[in-house]
Image (tube, rainbow, N blue to C red; front, side):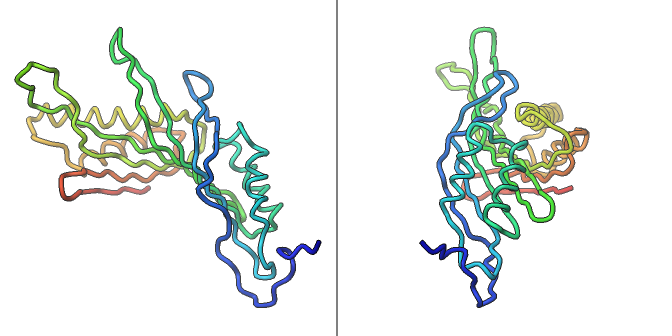
Length: 240
């Protein structure tokens, strides 16, 4: 059979991106406490197609993904991108992977607390690769009121901090979450100590940025802090 996709196209139009998206795929990510954690990712894979190709074999994207099954992470992203670029004869290759990461901690001596964090890894390879990791850390505040029944105060949803980083050295997902969470806790304590009524997106984002700047493993970062108020939201962004 003729390989129609690899036939030359004489219209000389470069296609910016062609690929497959929203692939639901089981992956294994590194877990500091348990070595590995199994989760489900949503994967987008695409390439920049040279003008002289009619198209590409979409099935090859999934074939490449299957070859790295169980070994997907920041360390293997480069290998996946190289194979995508080589096998598909592309000018550039890109992969995006979104997944839920679960962190279990002791809330007290008898109770364990499991928190869910939305993560994303994004990799691109043209002349050199660019790898970014993103995590969304919820920001909750203790509600001041205690119910008439004397129930313990609950946590109120204040907003979230969206942190993206590129790394010069390896860092555990738990440690990155811990850096952001400690900055949030420290700023909350500072606000309550000064008798202020609420957090501000400006003060919180500065606190998180200062903590990330102090981490040698982090090469570059961007932060977006959002306060999700009823009917509207406020935000602040920082990028190094």
